[in-house]
Image 1 (cartoon, rainbow, N blue to C red):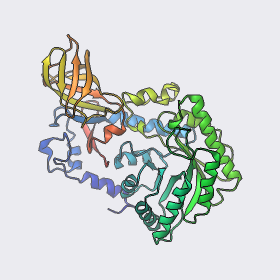
Image 2: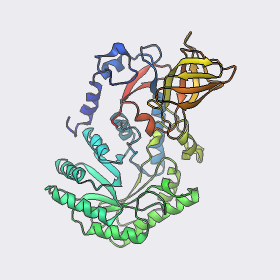
Image 3: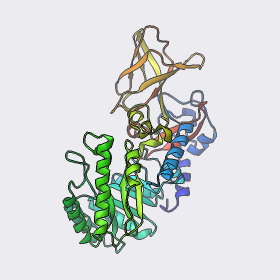
Image 4: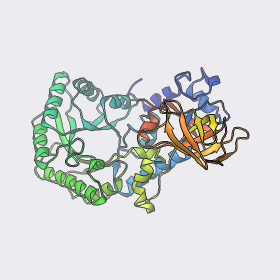
Length: 430
């Protein structure tokens, strides 16, 4: 598929054949294309889907996409949502339609997926030192003059490795745009730790003809013992670094200065501090990178989201629900459902039982007195209070915590409207 044909790329996903590769899809749909199955608008509960089945709420997806679009516009931010959350070209397309500047990646494989689906602007939030990936990147830059790529650098050695690999590619192409990553503090993750370290990296970039310094970046989510004040202090360090580099003429070859931060927990602080960026010698691209918003969740991000601190800005909605069927009810205090670690995110929190769909009449009721206490590979352990209404065959609808480790367990995810009508299928590439 040509990488410059986004429409054709999505159409190709619609032409993929439904078969045994995709969990939970109706057995009688085998041989249909994904587009043909979507056109049938089957019901998630009565249309032949098998359990367990993960579904995304059509209404909540649309709400979340719209909310971050308006939030970014309101605060004068460009937006490159982190694609590692979903690894879904269909969701990337919807994010770009909703005003995203580009899509953020973490590793070379993700960049290749993005390019295969015609993503024109990619921000790699990592230092790229893989020689094979760099030579491939050089080819992409040569082949497509409209492709914009930016990545971190945080070490002199990393700059040397990048320069060596790009020189050895044999490509005479434009330099790779890089931003110096400022570490979030001692004991934090990647990034140059001091202003002197950052300056040394910038000097190394200036000496490498294959690279071009275009800005600074970092990840405030790694600030040790993070509080709003500590996060804002670090973000002001990042802004000061950009201003210092600009004053020293380090961005002389850049068309704009990129200043980037923003995970899913502190983007309100990013918006606040980035509003304080002084006028620089070139236009400033204030680039936010939050990714988990697209599906949100019922656990980790429900508690961390900045919208809890600024409720007047709106609220995200959890879009995931995992449906599992009760397959054993050995005692009045215990039940087992047929979804486990292969199906549900469990790295941060266990799934939460939210509703029960009655196997006898299809009615839906709250999951009162029903708690998921553990996961085996293919079973959910459920504790039930004495008066809990649950029997073998019932479907339990569960909320999940951590979008990144929810998407990655499913290759094709139904998108269902509130009445259960499935309108689309989200393809993932992990």
